[in-house]
Image (spheres, rainbow, N blue to C red):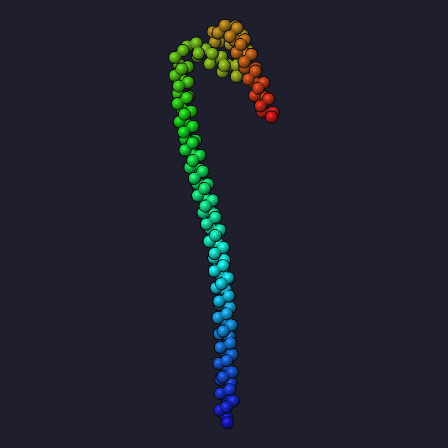
Length: 141
């Protein structure tokens, strides 16, 4: 009879251990399910971000190609403009007059410095004023 209380205590300890083990398994299962849900949510977010990055990269590449094409066309246009300016000496006088006009030169200055006639100088001054007025209106709006 002395061994009976020890056996019942052992069964009680085994039962308690089984109960604690079952609780640990349940908690582990719940945590595993929660982690799997979070992993799926994160994977969805990663896919969304990946698609956005691919879209932005594609747009950037397309824009870069367009910009490169525009730069090439601009370089060709500038080169042709220089060729045309260097071909005709009369054009050089008008180009110089336009630059002087931008710097604030008057009609008399253009006639003296560029060797163009007074009517041409007055016409250039008139055009310059019109362009300036148009630019100032554009900047105000």
